[in-house]
Structure formats: C-alpha cells, structure tokens
Image 1 (cartoon, rainbow, N blue to C red):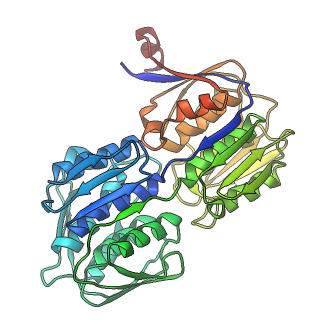
Image 2: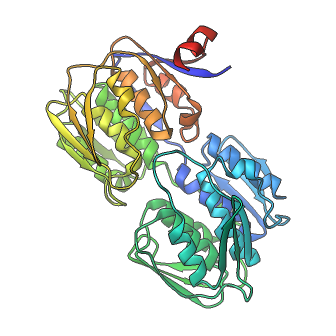
Image 3: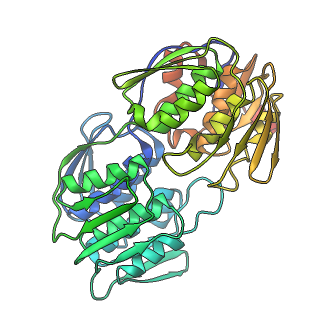
Amino acid sequence: MEEKIVINGGIPLRGSVAISGFKNAALPILVATILTADVCVLENIPAIRDVEKTFEILTAMGGRVKMLGRTTVEIDTRNIECGSSPLELVSKLRGSTYLIGAELGRFGRAHVGWPGGCDIGNRPIDQHIKAFEALGATVTTDGGYIDVIAENGTKGNSIYFDSTSVGATANSILAAVLAEGTTVIENPAKEPHIVDLANFLNTCGASITGAGTDVIKIKGVSKLHGCTYSIIPDMIEAGTFMIAAVATGGRVRVDGVIPKHMDCLSAKLEEMGAIVEEIDDSLIVSCPNRPERTNVKTLPYPGFPTDLQPQMATLLCLANGVSHVTETVFENRFKYVDELQKMGAKVRVDGKTAIIEGVDGLTGAWLKAIDLRAGAAMVIAGLAASGTTCVYNIGSIERGYDNIVEKLRSLGADIKKAYIAPAEEAAIS
C-alpha cells in the first residue's frame, strides 16, 4: 500500500535539527569509488532512496557494499565489471549518469542505460558528450544506452562548457583523473558538491586544483587508492528547514551546516524580515512577524539554488505583498503550482516567472509530491496551513530527504506517515 504524510498544520517549529550528508555530493562520490578499484569508507552518507539505489547498482556491478552504521558505508569496487549496471535501476536515478565518467576513467569505455530522475525539465547530456569527446572518446546513444569508448585511452585536453552544468563538470572530472596528461575545464560548475567530489578524489591520490573556481585543472595520475572520507552537509535539506521555520513563524536551530553555503538563502530570508544567527556550524532561524515580499531568481552557485525554488515559492505565498520567482535552470519546475492553488494560494505562471500574491493563510488539502523538491514544498505548505494536509507520492520526497517526518516531529510538528486507504486511492487517482 502507498503511504502518505499527514500534517495538522499551524504549529510553529521550535528546537534543533541535525542536517544529514548532502545527496548531491554523495551520489557522484559513491560512483567515484569505482575509479579507485579499492576499498573506501564513506561517512555522513544520507539514508535516502537515491543512495539505496546507488548501492544496488554498485552491488549488481560486482561491488561489495557493507554498512558500518546508519551513515557509514564501506565500498569495495575491486571486482566491478564495466557495462554491467542494470537498466531497470539506472533508469530511475539521474545520478547514474556519473557511471559513464567513472567507467570511462577506469576502463577506457562505458556502457550505461539512459538515466532517470525527477521530471523537472530538459536535462540533456550534450555537454557531457562534448567533454568525453575532448578526452578522446567516441560516443553513441542507441537503444536506450550510452556507449563511450576511448580506443587509445583517455587523453588530457581543454574542455570549455557552453553552459554551466553540474553533471557535465562532475563527469569530466571522473573521466579525466586517470587520463594521460593534463585536462583544463573552463566555465565549470562551482557548486559545493563539485568541490567535495574533487576533495574526495584528491584524498584517493588524484591531482585536481581549482574546484569551485572558474578553471579546474586535472593532472592525470596512473592509479588511485581507497580512503576514508566524510560527505559535506546537505545545503538543500538545511535550506528546507530554514524556510519551514520562517513559514511557520517558529525558531529553529539548524545544526551541522556550512553557513557559507547558505549565504544566498540567508540573505533572502533576512530581506523578508527573518532573523538568521550564525553560531559555528549552526544557523538559528526565526521570524517574529509576517514575512515580507521579495523577488527570487535561480542561478548556478553561488546564486539562489533551483533546488530551493519550490520551497521558497511556498513561503512567498504567505508573504506580505506580491513576489516574483524566476526559474532559469529547469523549465518544468513550476508544475507544483496547481497543488498550492488547492490550498488557496494565489500564484500564476508567466513563462519562466511565477507571480505570487501573498495570502493571509493556506488551508489544508490533498497534495501530490510532483517531484523531490516540490514534495518538500508541499510539506512546508502543510506545516504552515490551517487544518489537515495529506501529501501523497511521498517516494519522491524520500529520494532526497533523510527521515524528514521524524526530524519535523522533533521540532514539534504534528506530522506522521500513514497508509492511503482504498477509498482515498480512488479519489486521488
């Protein structure tokens, strides 16, 4: 039976919450262990569905995955077989794209099924292909698979991205660390998870400089080795709880974060009248009055992250005045607007911009988690709304949030998971 999240809203969140490891860093680093052909111990791994699927893929490929605790895993990739990832698994996970770069880097070839992930817009791999070809590989995309082969081995080269791409940047790094010579990547993504991937690989013996800047330089090495490494905290999970604190008029201490990663969101929340206090690796967020309107435009890091856009738009539905949210990364990211309108939100979409007229309050409703981040936004809406909200299709949320229901309950929320009754299934189908 399918589960739902049931929320009795209107309760200010109060207390402290510990942030889990970063999904967007964990997935490429898990796949990057393939390059070591050794044993790696990864700490601060989030307990989420996308990580579980990645474990399944690595196991199916001949790897050995052993949990040493809830958030620590030992991965042995010595017996990984190239091209053996099951299509039925990779087709459910966008992060499976990283298998291409990892296989190409280790074996000089790759055979990977077309990746899956949230339906939030066009997510082409043309920049990935451009990078692989620059490194001396030939790429074909037939029959639902991506095949890459470098008959003479990968060779270092200059790569310039026409548009900033996190996935293409990560894949280029994976493919280049064992290549012969030096690779220079210009116009790379600067996101913290790109830096984390480079730091992990350097710990394994790679030679990567410039991650997080305008130019990344990779000097190819002949071999990598295993290591012990801890994943950075999840800035998107942290941002979700920060927004939830403001939306409910509460006061939440978000622990175990890198405050610098949150600067863009913190500035926007303060612009709206919230108070954000920094204490070491914690942020305390509160909002004593109704938040004020603001405008938001998603941009690559260090700009406002697209993965916090639905959550922020939900908060703006409760703000005083008219706000504008412009999405520049994914064209289908506003599909959740219909769900907010069920609660009495006043939102209309004009091209890439959502125009949001703040209302005095939202009313509980049945809501679908359209995708991972939109699902988190629906939970925030339910927490802030009067009455009862039921969010279904919660598998989308659990793809990227570690124990979100229990964490919110620890902050005083009236929230639980329950099975959807047959009569309810008929109503929402």
